[in-house]
Structure formats: structure tokens, C-alpha cells
Length: 178
Image (cartoon, rainbow, N blue to C red):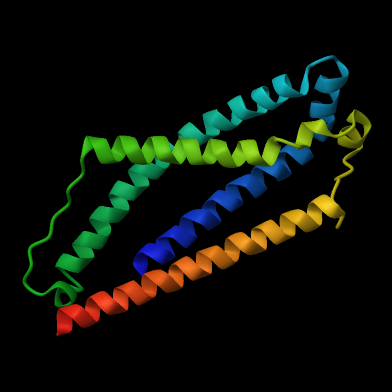
């Protein structure tokens, strides 16, 4: 249950990162259009925006690592004092390793950059005039309908996976009780 919930929260955070980056890129449309009009290739404009995003991703991952360690300490302090009944007499303590910090930091940065890249890949392919005046290509054309079906399939797969995890959890709990 907690694994499925955690996965859902991470997925929602990745989608939010992508959406916020799309909004930022669309808000900066005149700048992007000007760079394209001056002869910058779409690849170079994409790289510039991704480099800006990388700086923010590294800053966010640094804050996230520090906040994660602090959150861990607060939860374990609560479990050791206020919610003592939840763990019984088991001793608990904070264990922070360099490997887990580095893996968390790097995965946070890479996932954020991946979400930004996905959000950005078509933004600079539109006509320069549309970018500069803020026209957003969208609607329910054939590509938008295909994307909707793809996201629906992904959502159904996640729900099926969560149900599978719940069944496995119940089967494991029943086996332990027997």
C-alpha cells in the first residue's frame, strides 16, 4: 500500500514538474521566438532551456535531500515519543548513508531533467510567429487524441499495478497470520 502510494506521489511530482516547465516555456515564448528568429537552432534553444532547468533541478535536489533527512528525523522522533504505541518497545534510529543521499540526489535531478525534456521537446518546433504571440498548439487533433489514449493506458496500468500490490500484500499478511 505504501509503495503504491509513494509511487503515485512521485509520478504526480514528475507530472507537476513537467507542467510547470511547460508553463514557464510558454510564458517565455517571445524570448524563445526571438532566439529562433535570430538563427538559433531548435536544438540549441532546447539545450539552453534545459541548462537553466538543470540549475533549478540541482538546487531543488539539494533542498530536497536536506528536507528529506530532516523529515526522517522528525518522523522517527515522533515514533519514539508521541506514537510510541505504534512501534512498541522496538528501538529505532536514524540511519543516513552517503550512497542513499547520492542516489536520491542524482535520481531527483535526472527525473526532473527527463520531465523537462519531455515537456520541451515539441515547444520549440512550432512556427516562430506562433511562439512569439503565445499561440498554444493543442486541441483534439489526431495527435492529441492519441496522447489521451496513451495516458489513459498508462493510468490503467498503474491502477492494475496498485491492485496487484494490494493483493500481494494481503496474501503476505494472510500467510504470516497462519
